[in-house]
Image 1 (cartoon, helix red, strand yellow):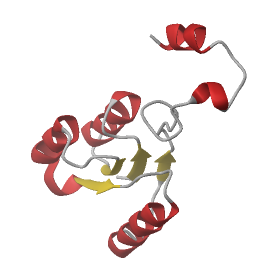
Image 2 (cartoon, helix red, strand yellow):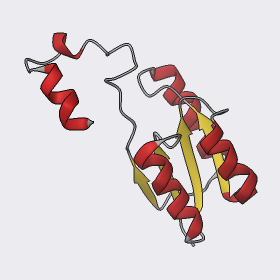
Image 3 (tube, helix red, strand yellow):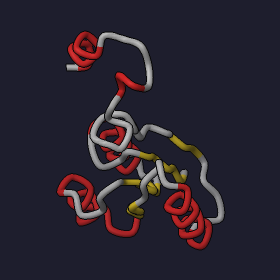
Image 4 (cartoon, one colour):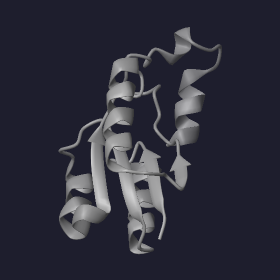
Length: 112
């Protein structure tokens, strides 16, 4: 089986892809913002050593380096990566109207 790494694995698409990888027998590395989240800890209790949870803030270079060190210490190779983590809403980049020129209300409605 393969070893996969998914960022943003604590909710939404990242969580579902992590769960799918585990269901298919893969070893999964879940990069999450909060390692104590109910979704991801539930998967950990179900899959044990097949799931490695690493808390990291992908907007912080030191956090990314620490996560990379922890991963390389434990795994010889990673077979696939899904870079799914979002950084705009609920982060220090939440002021999207200052980043790009768009109608924020319409954009959020599209996502809802």
